[in-house]
Image (cartoon, rainbow, N blue to C red; front, side):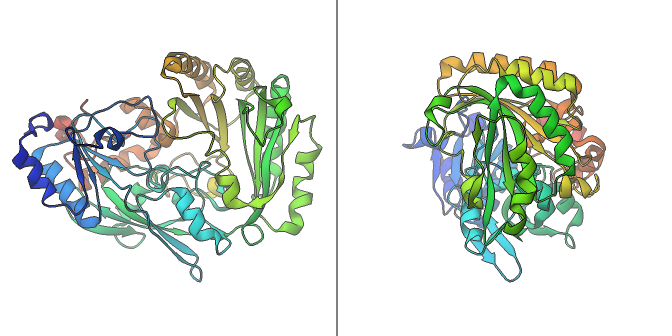
Length: 476
């Protein structure tokens, strides 16, 4: 029985009767809201959305989807650009109602439900002056980011999110509930650290935390330069960052200055290149570490200041509310060549809309000292995770931002490492997924065959288990 045939009331009641949380189908009030994800350009119509109340609900949904051969989508924070949190004719497991956290300050760990955002985690850990490496926007979901790798402001200091993941609770395709960690299901734990949602439905995570700055206070913020200075700024950054201490992280990009406070009005809508810094080490060393940053060039804005780490994490949330039109292109860069920098200058000068941007996030310092085969995340040779994001609130501008991002990527891709960070890819096909995992891909296929041989969990950056999964090709 396929999802398009799952219309009789008795079938809906079969699943509804197994759930504590609400089940929303196409004829129900609230369906339009239930099917939305962060990317407003995604317009899909799932068969039903189950807002799960506990792990038992997750098991019921997995069992139902498997037994009825229904596509199964999983929505945590729903931030992924490709919108895999919903799918046409799918049953969606929606974790939005499960957002509890628990911090153990003595052990320096935090446990988070799969519906949590990183803002939820930061709120919980900051009370103890702790943090775990995460992303750059606090409305991002914990589950998606953690399963895909997790680059963020603490990457150079404490590694990727997956390097700080201690255990994951997972519902498997056969309905079993297991905890994967270094000692239990170690093959599954290895795959979950970068392999995405291919192996089961993660229901909660436990992360290692670290003291950050002085009782959670860091020094950071943007340093912006005129777009005409792009090549000089990128070259200085490329050459200077490797010699800087791990406690200092900075992502670089091209952007348009937001026409809003706290940015000075005289800079509004100005095209710039910029670096957003985060120094998370001891306060007494901050001035010395940041001296080269303050001394370089002629910035149009020097925005470095002390602030709580959680403030930096959430600094861009208000500019990027849910529902914007997004189109992403991504690659990893193991070096920033002069030729690549020239591409950034050219496309930075013709950013099509105020929010469209390009960012390069470091994968260096502590993250680069982890062996390439230690986790599924494969890009451990240093370098940067790059993303080109066309963004605008108006659907009429989707074609323009998509065209800019695609052309930018086409000109930049020859200078890349050949693969991308899966959390920043659109739905781009199996060869791009293979390139994202490099030499780890074949091992991931083996784990997939072991835990999901029929490819139930396929609405993702899919790692297919082989011919047995032919019936499970993505639908919609």
